[in-house]
Length: 164
Image (cartoon, rainbow, N blue to C red; front, side, top):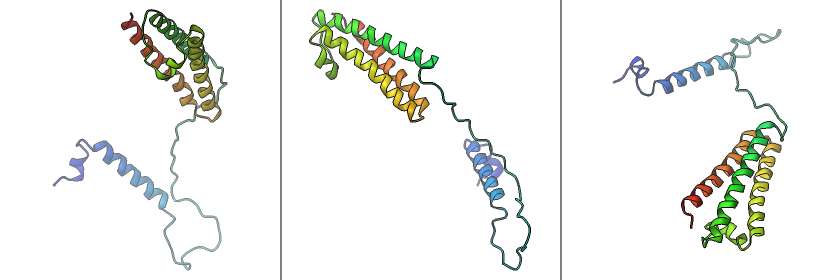
């Protein structure tokens, strides 16, 4: 049978230490909330806290302008990768290739349709990012552009490797 000291050295020691710290915090917070008989309670004077507990919360991200430097760079990256995707896709289609994306396939009949598709993808990325910005999801606002760039980069690499 393991003792408490032995458990503190095992693989679950961070969990045990965190749990014991949490129990200590709960014990400190619950001091002064125990039920007492009405005769034992003082009738006058302010109630003083038994112990002060200082807990620091993580800082919330500071609000920023939508068109800040980071978003400008991210959107330029999205537009650049989508332009490369357009060029490689158009080249493959002109040389007898086939569009694998079923949504883009709808627009792949002409160069103008293909251009409209990739422009729409860029604008949609910016629009989704703006919605996340307005609702306060600033991390998701940035991740949207990163995901769009990674998807288009994958398409460019795949199309480049499978050229006709």
